[in-house]
Amino acid sequence: MFASSRTTPMQPVSLPPRADPHDFAGLRINGPRLHQRLAELATIGAIPGGGVARLALTDEDRLGRDQVVAWMRELGLAVSIDRVGNVIGTRAGREDLPPVASGSHIDTVRTGGILDGNLGVLAALEVIATLNDAGIRTRRPLAVAFFTNEEGARFAPDMMGSAVCQGSLDLESALAAVGIDGRSVGEELARIGYAGEATPGLDAYAFVELHIEQGPVLDREGITIGAVTGVQGISWTELTLRGVSNHAGTTPIALRKDAALVAAEITVALRRIAVELGPPQVATVGALTLRPNLINVVPNHALMTLDLRNTDEARLQESERRAFAAVAELAAREGVEVSQRSLARFAPVEFDERVIHRVERFAQALGHSVRRLPSGAGHDAQMFAPRCPTGMIFVPSVDGISHNVRERTDPAHIEAGADVLLQTLLSLAEE
Picture 1 (cartoon, rainbow, N blue to C red):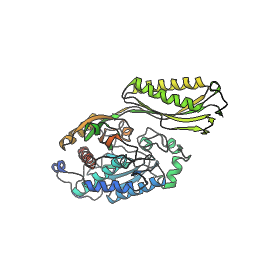
Picture 2 (cartoon, rainbow, N blue to C red):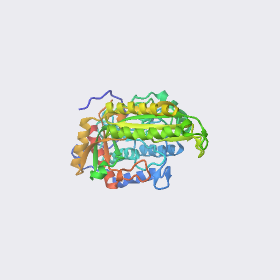
Picture 3 (cartoon, rainbow, N blue to C red):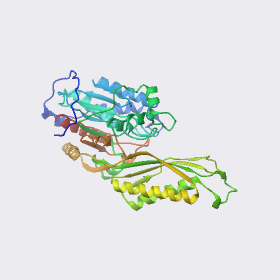
Picture 4 (cartoon, rainbow, N blue to C red):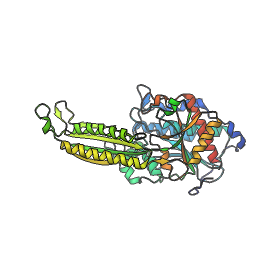
């Protein structure tokens, strides 16, 4: 038995009698129904090439939210929207106990695929639909959630909604966050009609999230299910480099203060640091803008991001130390001023061994190959891990591609992951 944090009274709704627990092993989700919902949601914010653009709190995000909320209500869930826009749909259990929760996010990057985040939300809804069809009422309530601004593509930090939900980010800071277009989270929540009244919080008995791997391991090894052991730590930093604009033809190299040169040298230095530290350390400069951005002018301004990740906190800190020292040295060498600010900092997270084992066991029982692996990307589940037993289920990403319109997972693997999710949630909800 897992320890629960507190009991939250739930209002029961009318459901059919509970099926015989011995029938659970044969229960399967409705694959065509899940694929249909994924396809319908993908039409909202659709972009050329088969991808989706639903940046957090845009009009496209609002339409996506409206659709998912409508499905929640069709399934008989009691829907709650909190002040940071998280949406939680709850299905009552036989007893008033802390719920077993699942879900993910429906916001995307600007050139996103149709599965990232969306699969976790819609597969959790498919679990509810399957239980409704079978007349099964679980002992514990089941909660399905989608969280605001998981991607961090418009507002920093990423995993914002789940961080507020689980108390690792204060609400006022989240609402005050200003996006890449100069608008704040609070303003945009109000504009799209998702500034809810509920106080953020979900005291879950356990949390399990289904997600595509977004990496190549499962696909390369021909494995169907990933039992995720944890999420690597993430350090996001924004650098501002200030040099001097000057004529590109008349200014000698020795007299320049070139912000673009320093940005390029920092990019190369980050790759060198990652190689020296070795796997699983990774380092990326994902965004870079120059001013005045003219062919014949030495740039006087560079705005860039550093993304450092490692599964080990000590090694992540070492990568930060080396990166920031390199930034200071390279900027000083060119006579360029530098300032930096942290956009996000999350320590590595380990998932609950009992949940990991349960994912493995159900995958094997369903006839699927399974292996343990860590997540290289951040996920809403990591915000729950410090507060309740938490785990994740991965399914393969073809060629390891994600955050790309070419993102794809074999339909049979999608169904396999949803079936493992169904069995895992059922087992937890009967405790």
